[in-house]
Length: 365
Figure 1 (cartoon, rainbow, N blue to C red):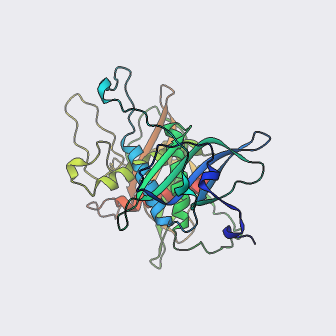
Figure 2 (cartoon, rainbow, N blue to C red):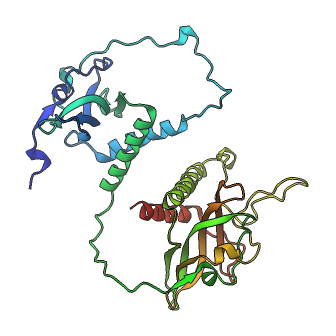
Figure 3 (spheres, rainbow, N blue to C red):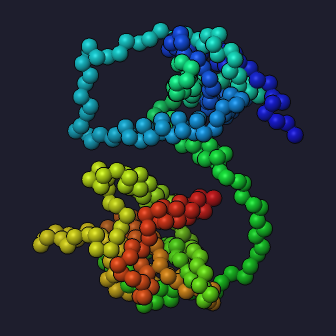
């Protein structure tokens, strides 16, 4: 089996021959480098090659990439049609620096060479870790060439996921999955009999539904199960879960700050959080309301029944359909068994985040 040390390593000056960069300070010493580089073969097929200098600390590279990704997210702004950014005064425009190739200081840093037949296209992300003086912290510089902002964010997110896997405590143990007899079929109404749910808007015609439910066994052990209609609109459901995950992540990160600094979009839904509307106003939809039994339009939808001995405890449900005007409609609901303590949230912030991320991974797998 070949190892990384068996491959031909070439200096950065050779790997990036012809590429130019702003001049680096004379006292700056390059320590390590990482990059994602687009390459093309003789047939015109494109691919991406990831490279990192030998001995680089994965944690350091991961931290720097995560920081750049956070900056992109914070500065991501969409303008309305009647908005524009204020022009920058001419005197404040930065002068373009002279661009030069990497100098002899970069000879000691080496990347594994490209496979035979591949050549760089000039589109890449390139991270340099620099030391300015002995004993000081490393300084990182990220270069992107030929990429738009969303390509940069997409590549950084993929790199972040790959580094996350690298930093995992261990590889998953191999599991053997054996065929089993499928449970009998039932309905959502049978699964959640006696529970209270938010009201489903009149005129909505449902096409599919999905629920993730905590179940309890008679011996006290708990687990989670998914139940869905067949067919299920996987793409729409994935979009809803991704939207919810993104909101939970933003909220959870902001929750470490002062509460007044939290973002303005809906926070994790809580019982009693929504105020009563003023006279003449339409009420906000509250997916935690306990209006009454599950709507018959959802209750009659078929799914796999729970196995004998499984007792449902709490659930998060998504039902998809179209409203009376033919527009897409999404029904969200949090619910729990009648014995649930109403003073408790259905889910903690971090529990819901981890649960929905797991469900989204399973849906996209």
